[in-house]
Length: 107
Length: 123
Image (cartoon, rainbow over all chains, first blue to last red; front, side, top):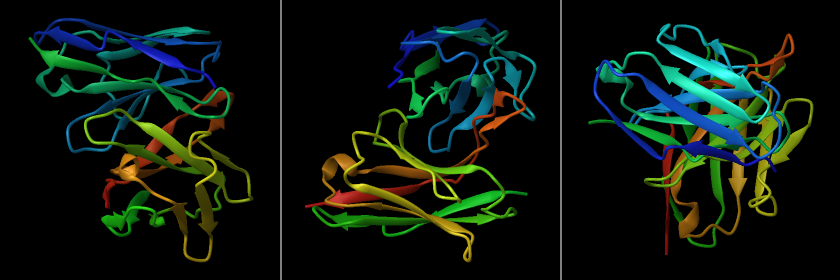
């Protein structure tokens, strides 16, 4: 099973600041890595697929990068609605696995 | 527009079987994707339960494999989850989702989710 480790656990930032979230895989997942955003009481929303492609309707301030074992989700300038929990997920191999999440909170 | 809706009991007794159904609308369930269940215990992260393809391929979380069954009913355009011998640790919000899979060599992720249904296991 591929383990995904996200860091940091919590990121405290102010609106307008840049957020950089990390996801590290225990073995290569090539580019089969996706990112989700989850707000309280809501289902997760797909942000990034194939490591770097924005899903439909996702603003350009969200970007993904990386391949193999190290991946990054960057939010270039935080908007108030971006404060949420972010998860990475892989399906390079079954079983499908999620990271434990990074909470982006208002400083 | 594709929509998924979970349904089932919100309260299940300890040691009983949890049964949930996900109704798919806006697309035929045999259109060629995996359909999955994901759960989230209170205050915790996302945990994949399992995924199934209409033609029969099914994968499960190894920690649940002995207790879980996912099946697809094309006639009703639904898929279901059964989890036996539940305990308090199975208390969670359960989501169903479409796994769009690999298209043009790119993994597309879980792109459509249901709103989730809360299941509480009581003693």
